[in-house]
Image (cartoon, rainbow, N blue to C red):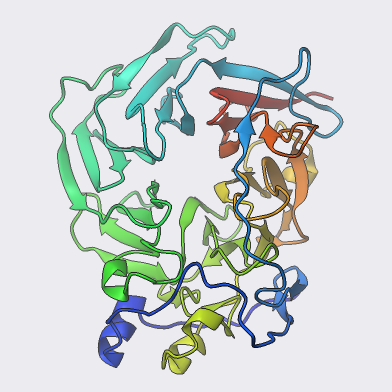
Length: 430
């Protein structure tokens, strides 16, 4: 097994401050291929060598997907032995699912612009497939995403802040409950990068908040990136904020490796360097680690739009991510499989929900992939697990866009198809 070298550094913000390079970066996000010829490169990842295309090997292309209905009788495709069913539908952009300690299921309905700004509760107490309760749990939020129950509080990560609400186990409505914002978060920016995910640790005394960048590659100036492109760590009351890791352009899904306790995340990499740059990735997240954004990618490969920046000492510390998940796949969802229903091959492996490309001539993503792990280490490149979302035809239509991946209480996998308004359930039976 190939392992990356562990490298630590200070936060991006601290490095930028001490080097006094917090002024505007004169990067052009729409830069066309320059006269200079760039070279391809190869880096060593945790699952073997990764060949990376040269910047501008192809022109930057925008291709937007259009949603269309599933053909009669057609469903997403899973490996042999698995069954795909509709767990629930009729949502308004069901982006993410969280299962509380009492097994109540909470679904965030939120979107980039016209958001439902709602969390819906689902309860099937007798597990007969019918929800005795399906109703709005809390409304009038601000682009909510991450959810968490710790002690007597229900936490919601809105795009501009972390809120907590007094909560009793089994409570079905918080609409008349007074919440408090315990952490203000920066919002807005390039493609919004609006999602704010949250998880707690094993001790349940910290909360980790993923905050995406305000830009593609710092084109608005690094002053706009303070506390962004980071995973933040706070106490349960929002105090004691520190930057846990930095240089992560847009981290979203997070989970703890069940074999060794490492924090892992799924990250969206940068745009507009061509069809085949830069691959999104999943990676272990080292405390105080720096992962390159915006100055470099996959370790020390410098972004050609920022070569004039004197950041060599910072880039030298950039960590190579563990597993590439494809170019422009929008890998958002992430969870380790720690249940018993699926075959042993899936035990402690990672599922990744890929929302799908826009900055590519031909679509990539639009599926759920799986990465096998052994003894806490990834063993191979991702393999398709739930696919079939790209429609046949002219290559512009899709049936849905997977995002959240959540392991249900019974060991099945729930997949949030936000554009399709559906939560899919993938089950296994011998």
